[in-house]
Length: 38
Length: 560
Image (cartoon, each protein chain N blue to C red):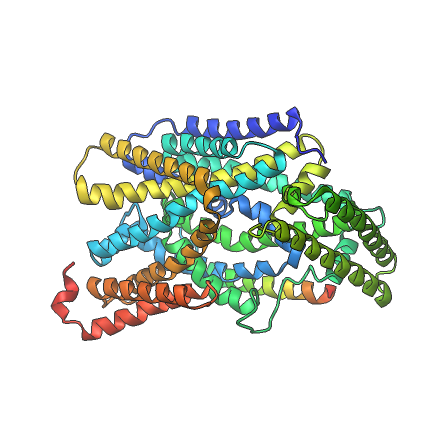
């Protein structure tokens, strides 16, 4: 008997949107880092 | 400042390297099928894939040059990685599902399934040419720096790295590469974290982390983001997002040394998660390495250090000149230290800030004078010394034992990227050339043997190239640029394959040939920044494919 259940795929579109948002946060964060320290 | 490291450091270095290599070889001692050898039997989970992808990209030069780059010109280099998360999303969404569905061993196998044999061979040959030359340099570049600062024999250093990598990459295949990379990344991150801690610990008592940042900022070292759009600027947000996107898409989507990393996954879910791991962590990691470089810069504002970090290059100067430079440096260094200390006590003072900037510009003028003196004595001397800054700091200022660990970081990084390259070169030669053209139905045992043989052969070529690279200094830069000259065209072929479903093999193939000829003509006749070749090559293949599709007779487009 095979007890292994197939892995459930997460919502990739949500993950990709999250990563894109994170990239934006990285850019804003590093921009603030650059400007505040200037 | 002794160039000799203690036996404890050598013991730490060798035991770390041998433990990782031994573990990798032991865990992967059985390889019964080509699937197991080239794809690791599809057992890898996302954490291993993520670290393996990261370790493949991070070569020894990443850890030697990147801190030096921040030390010299600030943190702007981080912008080069801004396009990477978007590229990883595209690879995860479009490339991975198709590679898995078609059960390919290499990315170029997909090109035959989608187009025809000649397009597959073109993709494979462009990859072999570019990556085959680069593999030797991945070993040579750190070896030349390490042998120079440690006083080790260059050939011995190349052989140490080369033979260890060939041993486990040939014996254990793709799974050995991924498993060792997981541990190599642990050593790398642990070592870099320790170096950062010792840097902060080595600052004067009144200089904390934020004070150090503020001092670095006063000398323009914390300039991570530049929003101005300027084609002549090397690093800004726009070149990073656009140029970085194309470069990363080509690297992660079509370069077999990366494709093999995620094709070893248990399923698409694990491979995609491994890619997202990199999309999240790569920018912070590069930011941290660059920040380490800024801290090295601030550290040397307070601590006596060399005025020229590639110290062996000073040997060409007459002793009297060196003595005169030493005296000048003592005064300049003291003046800059005083100015830095005063600013650290009064961080808001514009006057103190200006004093430090003035002292630093005098140091820069002095360094330019030193470089000029070297060139006068030896006109073809390479005067860039920023690659030597971080390793010099490690050797001169870290405690015994930690020096060995940091050397293990650099060797591990060299080995992790070389192993992926050799594994990919071996797989591509075996699957796309040898089996496809000469041996159609060999037994599993014969397939594994052929895989091992070609990996070994590429290992020997890489070591041989590294051993003779010192005679070919100019070739090294050419090889680095050569990557960008071919990358755009390869990416173009894959983008046509994925997104322009109506276009057939011959249109794509001839478009690639013409686009590559245009890129090569531009390369030899103009001064365009080499990152733009990625765009030109890629755009050229897409545009010409559409053109050829429209005008070529339809029957010639189908046959290969």
